[in-house]
Image (cartoon, rainbow, N blue to C red; front, side, top):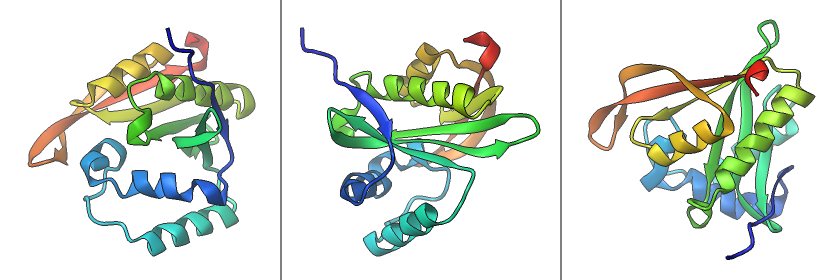
Length: 172
């Protein structure tokens, strides 16, 4: 049986840009990662946005998912509500790292960070209904389905439900 990879969350470095840009520019998986209309992402624009986000103070928390010393994707907490103590989680992986439990391990670490280090009370996320692998992963971490937005997303030529999931700190 192959040894499980070591999954950690860390800060972004310039060496990570190729992998992260590859994910951002992947039109085949756009709807799994981004609610905006799909389209080509020029490298120069991506790098400018990444640089601006890194140099400005924002409440958002952006981690690179590192697998055995290689960038594999990103894990983010964003949309913080300081009064209600909640935020939304987002995760994306490069194609070669999917289907191996890496996303589940990274999300579990992101949740732990959010509850323990950011004192969040609740973390929520959303996924298109056809992204069964993501939904299973989120459930493994402890997220529960809280509702659906029916036919909320336009995905590859058809309307699709968006599944809303949440996890309370008290449920861990």
